[in-house]
Length: 501
Ligand SMILES: *Cc1c(COP(=O)(O)O)cnc(C)c1O
Image 1 (cartoon, rainbow, N blue to C red):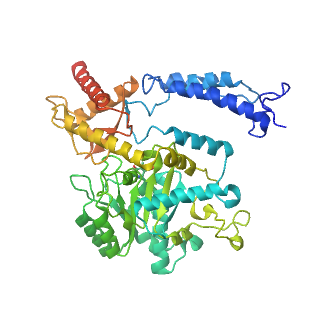
Image 2: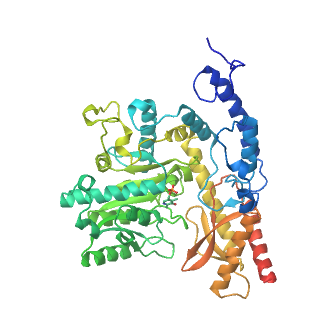
Image 3: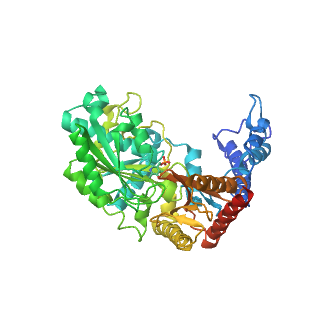
């Protein structure tokens, strides 16, 4: 018989496990109450309360739990509201324009809730069944959007950093295997590998260098290639860099083109780079963590031309498909190349029991236990649709373009690029001041003041050693009026700094 309410003799702790119908009541009560607090977070007036770090640190009784503590759901939600919901950063707020964090789609949240509650782990068929098929379908769909061939495949990852790690690893091990007959997976390091070189633009994401270091190859294995005034990799500089390394006895093994650099949203000339990679017979990876999602737009098809020729692709759904963190994928042109990461464990996926009908996704991943992150995307595509996502992305791109036009002739600003995606990099120019270190100080002051007072969150970055401010726009509900208000805050803060110093 089904019981809807726990028997009065049961304590809250006894029904705390997602276990039987007695826990159903607890589940519903807790989630309903939590939803009340979460939706209150939507009313937040500012993107951030402006609370001081020491004030958060001093909330010791809220931070810590003692071993015998058993708070009620109401008490706990009150605590987390005071500790976190009232002070955390609201990415959905129109004054949050700092990093690549998007507001999330509610259907995706529902997918995430289901995935977390059922707690599927997708590494083997016997832990996941149809969840494996859903992940594979989301990967197939993504490969199809990118125009990759039928041999293509992929896997969900924790983010662009992990996807880029897999790209470098596969490119390296593939080159070592094909050209030197080396099996790095089994036998480890070989001297030739010290000479392997990756090429990417000087504006590429730092995870390329970091991953080369994690792979034991060091930052030196990554050769930065010069960019033009639009922050795009220069093809002639790429060829020169490859030739120079070859002359020095080094071995070029891969080119990484960026589809949407983190700071400028610039697209490297992917099609031209694909041709160069083909000429040198080396791996072509596209880091589309930021710009990859723009494959769903009508506006960016041209910039993404050539991605269909890539040997591998990184795409972050948690940046440009409005998914909760984490949701990201690594795609590879030829599924056979996953052999460089696959391992057969007796207890999990023994080779002798390999069965095409019941695939084990662990054979493609560097993780073992892995969340069912594909479900969020499935809910999104079913309920919101790829067209709407594409229109959201076009909207934030147009916002960046309009903002650019409204700022480029303003003497208070130096805007250093025309936005290709949805970022805008600029700095405040105080009248009469030309000395860069002073401008750096003023711009940093602006960024910090707006953050601390909860007025707006903007990012900063460096270009030619100089400090610039950055808008990253990922909120399709944001308006030009919202953004102009932030621009006005920047001007006011800049002016006040000058008069008070
Ligand atoms: C954000 C970003 C990454 C890293 O992705 P994570 O999901 O944060 O790990 C890699 N490359 C580019 C171009 C990015 O913008």
